[in-house]
Length: 254
Ligand code: SF4
Image (cartoon, rainbow, N blue to C red; front, side):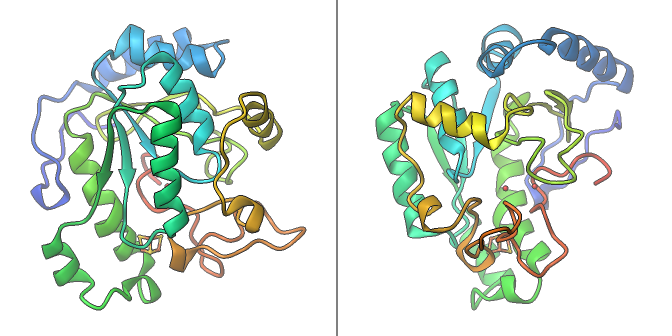
C-alpha cells in the first residue's frame, strides 16, 4: 500500500488526496471487523448505507452469476451506479442480458464503459490484438476505461467469489485496492448457493449458461466447457491467464 496516489493520465487516474498507509490500514481493519459474520446483504449495507453512501459503484460483467449480486444491490438501492465494461468484444447475448436485467431489476444507473475511438485506432486498428497480446487488449479495453469511471468513487463492489480461481481463494470481504476500498459480498458463496438464490428469486439466467458457458467474458477469449473441466476452463483457454487486470490484488481480474 502506498501513501502516494499514482498519477497517470493515460490510464485515466487523476491526482487526488491520498490517505496515508496508517489511515488506510486502520480503516480497513475497522471495516473488516464490521463485515465479520455478515451475510452478502449485510456486507452490501455496510458499503452502500453505512460507510460509503453515494460514493460506491458496482463493477459488473453481466456474466453467468451477475444477477445474484445485482438483485442484492437493487433490493438496497436500485440507483446504485453499475459499471459495465462493454469491451466491443462481448457476446450479443451479454448485451441483451444487460438490458433485460436492467429492466427486470429496475436498475436506474447502468453505465456502459468503452475504450475511446482513439485508443481503438491506436492500439487495435484491425480488432485482432486479443490474438497476439491478451494483456495489452484487456488493458486498453477494460482496465483503463474502468480506472477512469471509478475515479469519483471511494469504494467499489465486485461479484468475485473465493471458489472461482486460485488467486481468489484467500479473498476477504473487504480489501483495499488502488486507492479504493473494495467489497466482495459473495466471497464465501459457492455455485450451489448462487444457483439456489437464482431459483428462489426466480431470476433470469444468462442465456449462454445452458449452452455450456459457466463463466462468460469476451467472445474471442471464452469457449464452451466440457464435462469434467474446471468451471473457468473456458476463459483464456490455453493461456496462463486467469484475470484481466481489473481485479488483480496489490502485488498481483472479469
Ligand atoms: S478478454 Fe480477450 S477480447 Fe476481451 S479485452 Fe481481454 S483480451 Fe481483449
